Length: 561
Image 1: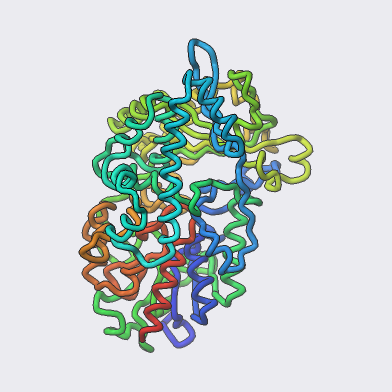
Image 2 (image 1 turned 135 degrees about the horizontal axis):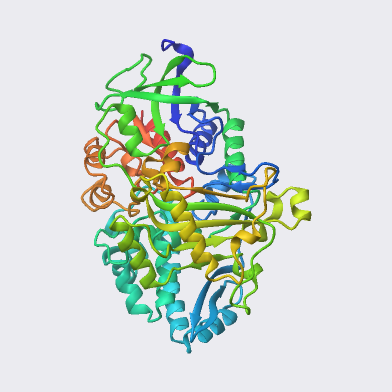
C-alpha cells in the first residue's frame, strides 16, 4: 500500500501497551488524529490478564501485577473507571532466630503491631526506630518528587531544592544506597527487606557505583507520594481495558495484529522535511499479521512505546548494548494457602502483602555474586503475594466456591545470561520453590490446584520468554536501566547520558535540541519521533507517565506552530 491522504495521521503510536494507550487517549481528546499499531492480537503489553490454566477460571496478571506509579491525575483526567485497592499488610518476612521460626510483619494499618514484631525479631526498639526514621525520609522525598513526574523535567539543582533535605539527597541520589542502609540498620534481615526495592528487575547490588540500585529504589518508594503498591481490582487487564476504552471513546484508532517493521524519520529539525507529503515528519511501515500484506502510514509525530533498542532497529540505526532483564516470574493457582513454619503467622496475612524469601542482606549479595559469575543462585531471593486475598474478583464463581487462591512469585537476580541453557529455567524454578518450601510447614506442590488436564497450575517466565512473548529486549521490564527524574544543570539529555548507560542514543537526543520533547524527557535524535514507553527518562512500572509526558510534548509543540 502506498502512502495516501487516508493514511496520514497527526500521531502514530508504535505499541499498544498501557503507556501508548495513555498517550492515545490524551492526544485524541485534544482533537488529534491518532493511530495505535500493536503487534499482538490484544493491547496492554505487560499489563494484561490471562486465564493461564485450562479449565481454571482465574484471570491472572501474567506479567505486571501491582500498581504504585499511576498518578491519580491521569486516572482523573482520562475519567478511568478503575479501582486500586490498598493492602493492609505491607510485608511479611520469615526468619529463624535461636533455632526457632519467626518473622517480621509490617502492618500498614497498625504501627504498634509492627513495632512489636520488630521488637520480637530483633530484641529491642532500635531497628523499629531506624525504620520509622528511614521511611519518614523517603515519604517526604516522595511527596516532593512524585508531582514532578508529570511536569517538565526539573534540573538536578531544582529537584534538590524542591526536596530540601541535603542528607536525604546525598543518601538517595549521590552515594550508593548500601551506605545509608548500613548506617541506618544493624539487622541483616531488615537491611535486606529495605534493599529489595532497589533490585526489582534490576541486576545490581547495594554498593554499585553506577547508582543503578538507587534509581530503582527511588521509583519503588515514591508512587503517588506514598510509595504504596496497590492491587488493581479485576487484575492488570482491568487497567488496560480502562485505558483502551478511554482512547477509543476519544476517537483514537487501534489496530492489533499490526507489526511495525520500520520508521523513516530525518534528523533535521521538525518541519524541515515533509516526508510522505502534507507536512508529515515520519513514515511508519507495518505488516498486517492477520490478513497479510504490508502498509505505510505518514504522521507528523511518531510515539514509540517500545524499548530504545527496538526503536534503533526500526530506524535502521546501530542498537547499542542490549538491555538485560533479571527476574523470574511465576504464577500459581492454589487449592488453599500453605501453612507456615512460623505458627504464629496467619497465612492470610503473610501472603496478602509482600512475602520476602531468602532476602537477607548477605543472601542478596551472595545471589548477585553467583549470578554475576554465570551461576544460578544457590538460594534465589524472591517475593510473593496473593492477589485474591485483596481482590477475589479475578476468580470465577466456581473457583471462589472451591476456595482457590492465586500466588505470584517474582524472583530477583535472575539475569538473562543464565538462561542460555534450555534446562536453566527448570533449575531456576526448582531452586526458587525450594527456598519457599524452606519457610513453609508443607511443600507448595501439595497446595497447587490442577487444570483440566490434571497438570499443576504453575507457569514461569524468564527474561528470554519476556523478550519472545512481549518484545522486551533482554527481558528488561523497564526497557533499559531507569534514569533519575531530572536533567543535569547544563541542559536536557545529560542525565540520561550520565546515568542510563544509553550513551550515544541520548546524546543524539540532546543534540537534537532542547525542544518540548527534551523538556518532557521523551526526546530521541529524530525530532519527529518521541519515546512514550518505559525507556523515557521517567519510565518504568505501570505508570502511564511516559505516555502522558509524550502527549504533553506533542501538544506543546503543536501550540507553538
